[in-house]
Length: 227
Ligand code: ADP
Ligand code: 5GP
Image (cartoon, rainbow, N blue to C red; front, side, top):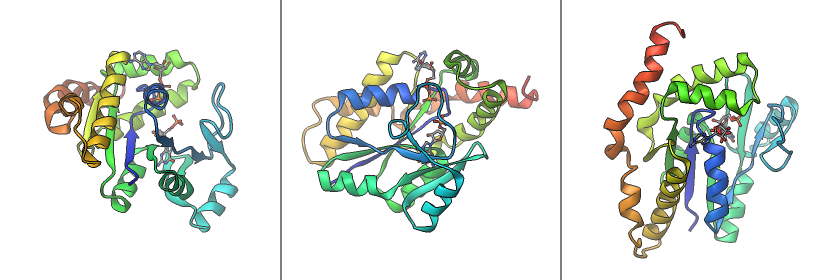
């Protein structure tokens, strides 16, 4: 049976970095390469990070029902998961990893109720801003838009099964691996080799308290008008 793992995070939290490590270290995990109408960033290549398509091509794919889910992210660009990635994972007996936003995650939960969802958060707003700037791939206007989107997105954290605060990278990688591997073992009826206890640390009900200052750092800036 194919397990579906959804990973969402505000842009700049380190999700791509974490997902790359996960893909290197966890076997039998098919990664769904999304379609998007946004332009490639930095060294991104068509067919590796995304399939970069025109708006017309994307809308044609919507009409032909090729998407499992799709959404407008940052109010301008379309992003979508092609159904064929799920079919391929099922045929190959692999699990599927979806790196999608909160709107996409909501659509997948409706279609695949057993999907496991993981939300990644930065340690606070100023660290997120710093990571977006240090990545050096977005204009000032885009950084502002991403911070504003982040503020709205993180308010959806309660819809996710697991929450990971990406503070120290090595710890986050181990945490993410524990979640994926323990869910996989548990669902296949195998002993979880101690990974379950590690994964439990990231369960929503076990991190609520720790999240409050992070959420507050975003709310405070919003309340002061973004200054
Ligand atoms: P996302 O995919 O969430 O938009 P990226 O993976 O591109 O984010 O990471 C944004 C920036 O933050 C990158 O420059 C990355 O190297 C850096 N980064 C990622 N994780 C950490 C971490 N735990 N600590 C410090 N910097 C990080
Ligand atoms: P970025 O432009 O930084 O690569 O991604 C922007 C946002 O779009 C991220 O939150 C990412 O998870 C989301 N995203 C990427 N692919 C998809 C997709 O196929 N569907 C949806 N709904 N969101 C996606």
